[in-house]
Image (cartoon, rainbow over all chains, first blue to last red; front, side, top):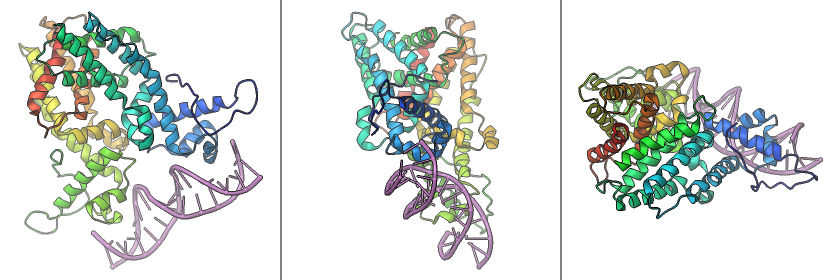
Length: 211
Length: 211
DNA sequence: CCTACCGATCGGTAGG
DNA sequence: CCTACCGATCGGTAGG
């Protein structure tokens, strides 16, 4: 599978028996199957029947777990958002070596993109399918990531480690666009160690800024 | 609108009157409207009724121009492919300055991405919705672009202009991923000259490789 | 290009 | 979680 799916979301269902809610497994399975299908066929291109059959239920039974199809998408993307937030939180601003800080940040982001390739693809493709009133709970991650990069690039410029001629916003959005595009070809289970590939990627991208 | 739509595609309709086929305009309008809707709502999320109403026809009337919904997608993406092919054809291999050649290539590709942002977004999102037997006519562009970058990077390495430690394929796919991601924020009609922004983008990306 | 229509499938619900 | 069902909409067609 692809990426951890921590639960604890509202699903309008009450835990019934003792000793570990039994159908949490079902819920996780539903999310995993939905993730796989949304990635390959897109949100609009995936029917509730597609999902239910892959899970082994009847279509209507899915509504025991959700209220609407969009709930599946929301839960998948909320999980991605929550798992990714750590990366930004770990960034140290005001370091004396902002370039190293930026390199660490990019490296982590690339590894994250590789490990969460499916959910990231769904985010990039179908975020707009999340009902408008729920979108703010998945605050458009891209902007946060870009803003973080902007701050570090600014610090690098002020430290004389990056040419001030370069437009910070352009540099940052290009950088993060490159980072998120890696999900399309990174293979976390592939022959090459993902941490090593990520370091290589970060190196190339940071070189472009630091020179 | 966004990008030129040269026609001359099969559409199962015969020119009737003299002096310039009158409903070629309609056909172009249909493609333009489809491009706009496919970009914002996705191929699967756009209905034939959405398109027909935006054009000002009834749904069934669209089938005077096409045989299936997929024909619209195919024509849009075939047009993108044809328009983009020039960029690769203009690349000079075996130059004595492969880095400059790579910079020119990347600059052109970025400008193209900006000018064809809508169609590129559709390509990246819904290429897989093109019927399998027609996909080869839009030979997965990405691969051609990546291969072209690979060749130029190899030449740069052999000329001692890029460290040989760097994996060529990784460098090339990262580079082209960054290039194609620019369609999301480039504004060809915006305040800044797109050629200038493209040069800036190319500079940053090439710096990462040449260093 | 419209009229009038097709079967299939869509997301979703009531009631158990 | 199943049974049985809903109205709405889907892509597409015949015939003019």
